Image (cartoon, rainbow, N blue to C red; front, top):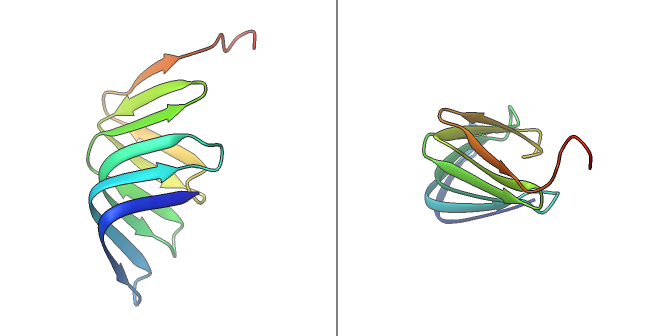
Length: 93
């Protein structure tokens, strides 16, 4: 997983990384998440964004009003007006 952002602050006492502005995340499976602003609590192994998010992967595209990331960004919960475009037949792969 890689995370790229322009402006970040890490609070060592709380183990919290706050990234302001555009954020690009490449997950372990190669999917790309684009969002603005991210708060990552490393102690709780959870991150969240309150801004729209877009996830592009080999299997399709998912957009939502916001998202929460868990388990080193392996699991994502999309929240609010979630839309998905699936690129393959998920019933008969």
